Length: 152
Ligand SMILES: Cc1ncc(COP(=O)(O)O)c(C=O)c1O
Image 1 (cartoon, rainbow, N blue to C red):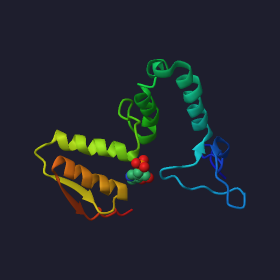
Image 2 (image 1 turned 30 degrees about the vertical axis):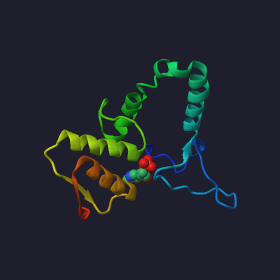
Image 3 (image 1 turned 180 degrees about the vertical axis):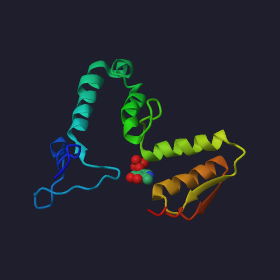
Image 4 (image 1 turned 90 degrees about the vertical axis):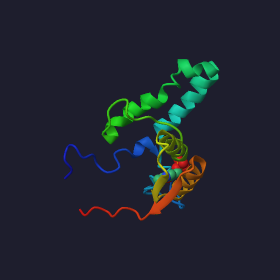
């Protein structure tokens, strides 16, 4: 019997648009990498941004609709989920765009460093990015084995 703090499985189904099985039946959708199930609230928020903000006020939306501060505002809402404090999480571009900016910034902050260390187990696009950043910043890319998993 579930405790009061454990919701029943499927308690949130009604909040998502869930792809169906090829035969049209309900399906269990477990993909969470890159594109998880669509939260219905995301659709509403996107439509609101397009129809109620962009269409109504145009470029003034950066101020009036709070677009400038959205990365910090959303980051503060996500922060407790990852154990961070307000002001420590920022929402931004795609993983690849963010990682590219982060690696270039890190390289430029420590110009005395000569090596960009990666591991062979990284996501393919992360490895391509590391190669490009190393070339761009004059670092030598070294790839090691992924760290061993800590025993349970
Ligand atoms: C570890 C990792 N790096 C990079 C990516 C690529 O993300 P994006 O397409 O947002 O750049 C993904 C996507 O799943 C990922 O899981």
